[in-house]
Image (cartoon, rainbow over all chains, first blue to last red; front, side, top):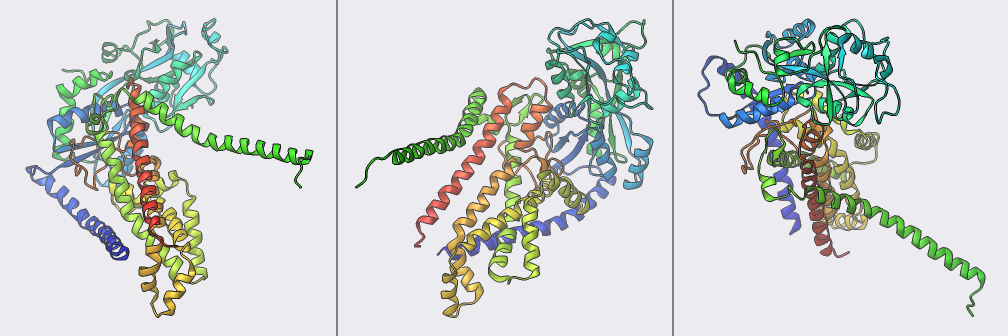
Length: 313
Length: 294
């Protein structure tokens, strides 16, 4: 008896696999038709639509919070959020595999060209908020403020500061040595690129020997556990276990604490806009989502997640 | 007459020491599993409930349950096995029952062995290049399942070949001698006698598929996606999905201030699902084996 049921089982499975393959061909033509028609006709159908949103690790928690809230308003739109870094998002934009790419830096001209060439459409940029890049040290570190020049000396290739005593810090309770333990990010991170641009200057490179972390949260966690460490990460990732240092533009100028007000009036020197990119004109569903993000309810979530909302005019 | 000489006593002592040492090693095997399970369940206890399974993550993934991730994992495992099991079993039947020893089968066998040794992250890159970009499927459950299927195929082929090989050649010869064709022999004699092993091999791949993170990270698993709660048809195979393994990774590395019990509870669900599937495999095997007559 086994053999009869067995036959049935295997042939059923094989049929299913064939069906899947068949469906895959059919579905592909359907979606291309759908994108063509949705560009011209208004979205009247109640069909479930998914928006692929991928990119910046700095923004992934924010993007998740938006997707969660928006899901309550528009249950037929399903937003698929993934992280990986601004570089991953921009690569997806260029490959045409994302509806929205999150980036914590501006698209570079070469990337814009590439995207245009690959997809045949001009990527559209939407500014959705700001992020203050906070300088984190351990709680036991007595340092209160730091200038951009000093930060550059710490992180830049060939920079002079390698020990906390170079900065005038005598001793840090719990630290094993006087060495500054530099915590940085992996090189496809938008935060990594932005920090290099603003603090290190574009031509110079990072000093080697830093601990490069894969996520914004990892930086803060490592700094919290390491008394001699210094690191940079988004303000939204601050926890009670680390200390945020005030930053001044130049030595002698007043140092400023990163906060919503100081980011918005630009007195805090290392803050950056956060972007969402779409390949070409967004289709109506994506457009509706983006306008919701840039309007009051979306911006409230920006503030709640620890980022800085857009300045209302 | 047997007398207790010093030599005999020394031998007996060596025997005892060997038994104790080997026994202790065997015990070492069990302890990590028990420790892992008790530790996980202990830490996860405050969150474990039925609601945890059936609600979506909320509050920036700090509250709520794991519904969308659990369902995503079920989809990935099911679809990948639907693809890998028929292909793998049929290929193994061909290799073991039909193919003669030649350069062609040797190349196939070599490919199977080597494919089994490819690290999962390489499968991930292959899946991204082949299914997502080249085939144009896009990041989706289908692309991720195909990647997982490619990863599990060689193991299914190897385990199936082994079970087919365990059927004594005399059975086949007896069958051929009464005039049966190869296909009749396979259908009536070989498969019924090896189905236990084949099924076990396939089911054991469930646990491997459910736990993999790398192959699905680039091909279809997402950080967050909301699906209707309680609807088991919430995903289509063209959607991207959340998955338990990926969810565990993201809540520990990316979400700040998540309650400590949350990753543990997710791990308990993943482990529980895998262990229960393995248990099913054991039950099925012992049931079918009890009906075997040789």
